[in-house]
Amino acid sequence: MVTTILSLLSAVVALYTMLCFVDIILSWIPGVKFTAFGRFISAICDPFMNLFSNIPFLRFGNIDFSPMISIGLLSIISSVLSGITKTGRIYFGGILASVIYMLWNVISSLGSLLLILFVIRLIVLLVNKNKTSEYSGWSQLDQILGNISYKVAKTFFKGNMTYTKSIVISAIVLAVFLLLGRFLIGILVNLCYAIPF
Image 1: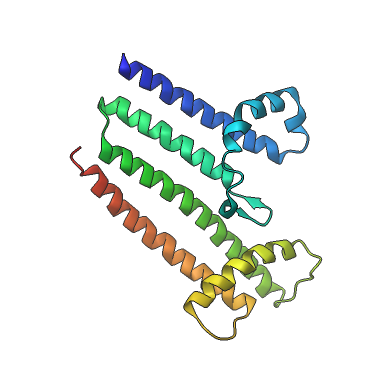
Image 2: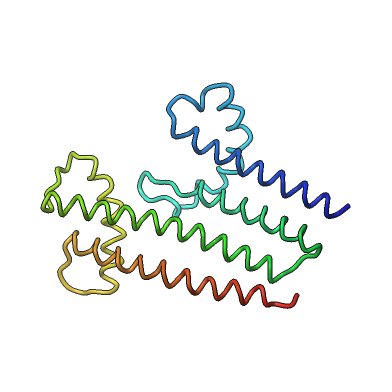
């Protein structure tokens, strides 16, 4: 009986996660959110997703990462419910491992996206010989990346810092962080699974 209820809850959370993902995709297409289907999906998903939209560190300029956090949380809940259903018991080590793994997935996804943006911007800077019009589409991206890259680069190197140099340093630091993080999270997750309760 309890297993059936947990399976049903896991399926409902997985379905709700999918609806939230559809809601995010619909928000990228102008006008679709105002159709009957768009309003229906928004009415279901927006109350939950808006819980995370006011967290300041999830927003970089015009880029909002709060939908990713809300989807990640739903995925953690679904994974925990599914794990309890499969094992037939509440298993602290398994729950902790799932939470750590899903949090790492969210962090590494954000980090990977940032790394891709650093690499793309670096390529454009090198092709254009560090000359970009302030009226181009790159200026808004430069505001976001510049704040992050200068902070990261100045943590590791002192002295005069160009924008290009700060992007290179930040990309290297981020790549090393992602590689080491993946290795360490794997060890941590295995330790959590070894917890006997």
